[in-house]
Image (tube, rainbow, N blue to C red):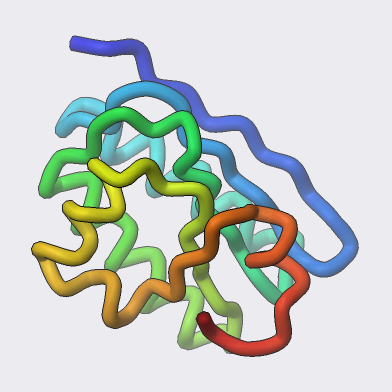
Length: 116
């Protein structure tokens, strides 16, 4: 099992959460806790920086969907940025790319006004 970490970077216009390593079934609950904690700052946007994410399990994907629903209820957008070809392909194959705007760069995802 690979090591997983989350690094939060709160900004004026949102929060960038950098996911590092392998997001497995064991990391799903800590991920949800960190994402929901980010909501306490009432950001306009939450960006998942997946540039250092090497794997994501189906439960990890489910956690992101669950958090996305909660964010939408508070009118907060959740975006994905910097995903490797491997991770981006997982989002495409599961059709989650249709509901997660994907950007090449976390800064662009944070500042761009509308979805990609």
